[in-house]
Image (cartoon, rainbow, N blue to C red; front, side):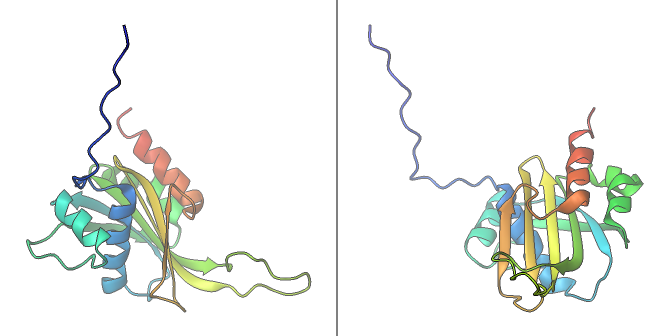
Length: 177
């Protein structure tokens, strides 16, 4: 008897469940609109998703802050510190895990992407805002450079999260255990 395989998934219907990149893109855009580049401290936020479909629409259609039906998510500022590890490992890090996702945003100096400079030359460092989002939907990070604010580098996982991003993921993972 020949076994039948399950029918292929219907790809014609859009998926309205936001992924980690959707959430990170929306968060980074909101921070760019509100916080700017003036901060030399790391900030910790809790994120509550209000309208998942609206969040996906806003994120994927290039206008993360424009929504017709109302707010799609709410970011709650929890704390700031010059040391992002202090935020993540302290009581505020634990409190942030009560939200749908945790956001860590920090401004720091980043080297340029490859290709690396030649021997004897020094790479020009650029100021960047790095945003790490950790939640049930997964983990993603975003980097926006001050000299080119229209360009945002998004990555799944902790590609640019640094030590504090790894610690944030560990705190999130251990929050229920």
